[in-house]
View 1 (cartoon, rainbow, N blue to C red):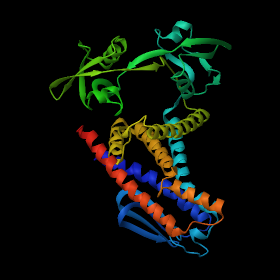
View 2 (view 1 turned 180 degrees about the horizontal axis):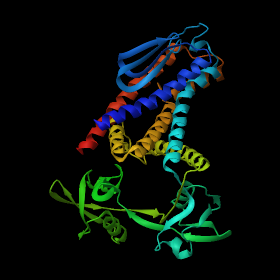
View 3 (view 1 turned 60 degrees about the vertical axis):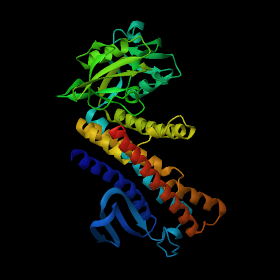
View 4 (view 1 turned 180 degrees about the vertical axis):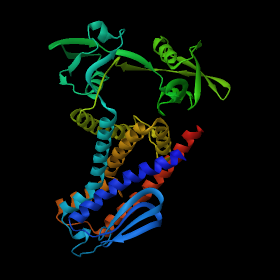
Length: 414
């Protein structure tokens, strides 16, 4: 029930903000909005105000802002089709842009409420290459690889760039600056996370994602790790220590699944490891910088995912639909409000980005038609554009059914 309620709230807010973007700009440029709806299907609640029908519908997925003349060739003063190309472009683009702004606001709220990791080192592993080189707790990181570092993300993403085997860092200590060249630290990664029990990590684990070595080997949510390479483990720290100290190319994970002992052989990934953290700050400047960074980073990440899907570097298992998203929201709800807000921001970015893709029936396709109209000097007949969007809608629904089917298979590991 918690999963269902949280998922409905998250989806509803994200869709509401998206459709409000279309609604607000449409009203601003003089387009008559006929209906502003959250959800699809039969109407559960409706209210008319200032000529607009506001409604909540039975199926809590999606929503729409119905504008006069958007799908019909109506030439009235208040119709969508009677406005300039630039005015219509603003109306269509406003939805995805609002999703990006929502993510930015959520990240700012998270940063101001829970703080942001800044650039002053807090705790550092004494076995790390950084400590051996001479870096100490309390040092302020000024730059990484010649690029200014203000927040943790500036530091982390420069160090973990897989193209680099080492990095240069400039630090400030007692008013003096020092420079170091440091070889990267590495760790074995099998792709499992610990379940939190009574505020503490436990040996009950879940795979991080469908592409992790542990998931591919057969590890499931709720498995209790009892051995790593035949060595008994009783804490999460012992699990991580045994995995990181393993020298073999294959790591054996032994788990207890509902009283049955199972063994899985995993081939770990060799990942760059940052073995220190930075102090938490709550200044508005740091919160704003961190939030803008995260928003842009996730938009770029979506570009990378699309490129990898198109080039075949990622398979269909990397794509998830509503079932997987609801499952993720449920897991986030169990972890607390911070996880829910972070996930909501990511989903909002995802929705905004996907809507900007030039796929028929999505906002991106409508923007393409407007660009073509601006170049040609005249609009493509609305019935032809409508047919393209209809075909795209059918394809999208078919794709969604396929992805949902794959999500269900993942849940039950068929």
